[in-house]
Amino acid sequence: MQRRALLSAAGCTTAWGAMGLLMPGAKANAQVNDLNDAINKAGRQRMLSQRMAKAWLTLAHQADTPAARNVMDQSVTLFERQLAELKAFAPTPAIRETYDKLGSAWTAQKAALMGTVPSRDGAAALLQADARVLALAHQGTVQYETASGKPVGRLVNMAGRQRMLSQRMAKFCLAAMLSVDAAAATAEIAKARTEFLAANEVLRNAPEATLRIRQELLLADGQWVFFDAALQRMGNASQNSFRQVSEVFVSSENLLASMDRITGMYAALAA
Image (cartoon, rainbow, N blue to C red; front, side, top):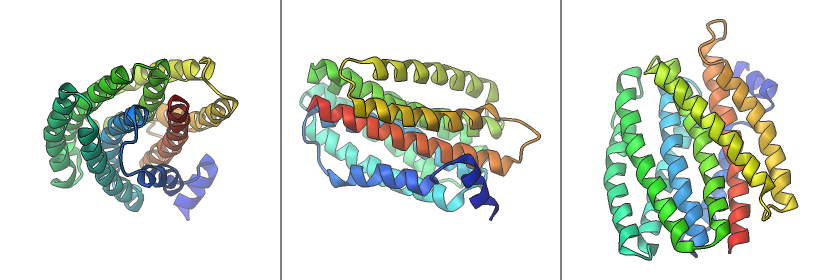
């Protein structure tokens, strides 16, 4: 009852709803169709590296356990499938090499995610592993954008990066709440917040932005309000810690779902 009241008060659709918006679209297209689709999926790998870490840290807080476990399990499955698809589609040896390296880095992150019980003790190692995966996933996304050679490819990449930033901020917030390098986590959140807000303005004002894209960005603005409010309450001793973790988890899922739709709209323009 307490959790239902929390989610209702926050105006959220619940983590299940956000995940439902993201995952079926990803499952419907089980191969890379073209370079624009590759940019979208490559960018989604960046997001998934952070989303899985966020889910693990949520479990370390012993909060939102069923939803966090489902988010992690489904994200692992999607990451591995897209990794194989992107490597198979790679149009150049350099891109294939990036995805070979990403596969090795992923092995280390997966071991940290699935091979340890989520707890404060394992959090530092997890953050180190996901940083390597994120760096290589970003490298692959940039390489695919370059291979595309289309101006709108930059917007697909940028919108896709917003998905990652939503999960990265949530991840660092949950790490800070575990007192895992809290000062560095706070600095990373501030940096990501600045990047996120600036990029949304670029996406909104881009000549390629359709009315539908701008409308979805307005919806994303609303989700951002809830998410940013949850971030701002980080470390507030007067707040219930379970409530804080749940708010960060759910609001980040809802923001992610909105940014995923926007990325798909830009990818459709690029086709």
